[in-house]
Image 1: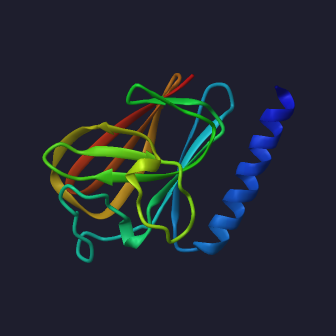
Image 2 (image 1 turned 90 degrees about the vertical axis):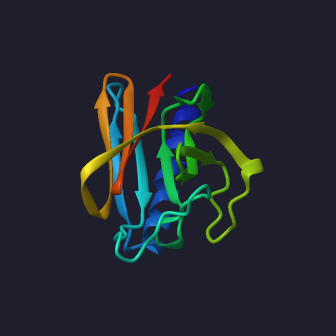
Length: 162
């Protein structure tokens, strides 16, 4: 079990380094869990002046999906997400959804059949619009809550370590 964990961590580190080297203009938000494991998301910082939300369709900020890296097994939307790398697709609408997809091949089209989980997420409106995409995690115990702010939209997705 220990060897498997080392292999997964090494894979994530190498994969992350290669991806981040290819995407210098991207930002990262991370969450450190109590057991020392980490959840991170990489995304393109965009402005609401240049980017519009696609109602009912997967959103790729700056034309590139967000990427989730985790060395912890997570629970989200009633499903289990194994340790690894995934693409993340917020789907704006009256009710927002978040799709976690196992296809991390650069420049590939979104394929709903490769979703590990797709679930409704909590939404709210903020009084003052955020001119830039803001992505962060809030950490409490075994939970990392992904927070995405864009324009007047605020969305929240809770990931729980297993």
